[in-house]
Length: 242
Ligand code: NAP
Image 1 (cartoon, rainbow, N blue to C red):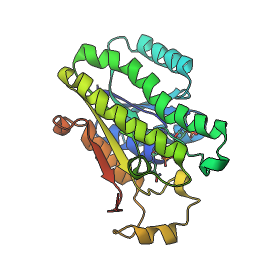
Image 2 (image 1 turned 90 degrees about the vertical axis):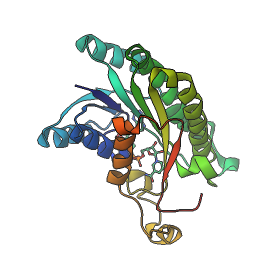
Image 3 (image 1 turned 135 degrees about the vertical axis):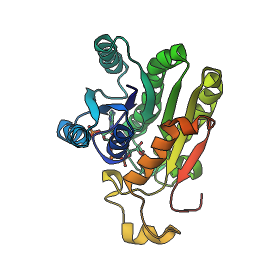
Image 4 (image 1 turned 60 degrees about the vertical axis):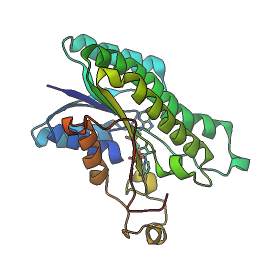
């Protein structure tokens, strides 16, 4: 059985991705940081559909917690390795730069960028040994065009895109692909406070995206069919101008 780790899989995009990868036959490691009930619901939906999954609690910005959780997983699965990693966990702490608190800046970069670094470095070792792997990083339209009020978030996502392109070239010889997805507005907890009625007028397709649509793209990038795609940033934004 092939294993996929999805960070931030208790809610939103991560939940939809975990459910979709399980449907595609992966055993899914459902990471979350605090919302156990929501993570258990992801697992329940996977199991009810006949899939396999397990919960993996850690904060992606906590290197020690990641090491402990993944070491313990490896010990209980000595012959297995994680062949698909979806670095999805992310947060917003919006503020204008002039009012931005250090805590807001650091927390967003710690989660998106340091989280990517700690987990990917750890999981990559086994992918290199097995000469196979898929790494998919959840970036954002904000990381491509920059969004006012989101200098921290835009910086973190732009850095994630740079890291995606660099790592793709480092590991291609080992048949590991590394790609980023850049969603526009997708209906999740993260966007529920936005004025959807107004913002959807900016989107040529006239609506916010669904988590399942991002999950379908992620599943494609995780599949064998995507073996020749690496170092790319794929936008999924309803045609919103970038
Ligand atoms: P969401 O609904 O707010 O869900 C966030 C998920 O990330 C939750 O499962 C949460 O776990 C987890 N998480 C947050 N901080 C974490 C940490 N430190 N360690 C582990 N897990 C953590 O967000 P979403 O809309 O699904 O966004 C998912 C990703 O897509 C993010 O990277 C986001 O930046 C990106 N994105 C979203 C949109 C959009 O329109 N929704 C657009 C572009 C990019 P708990 O439940 O345990 O808190």
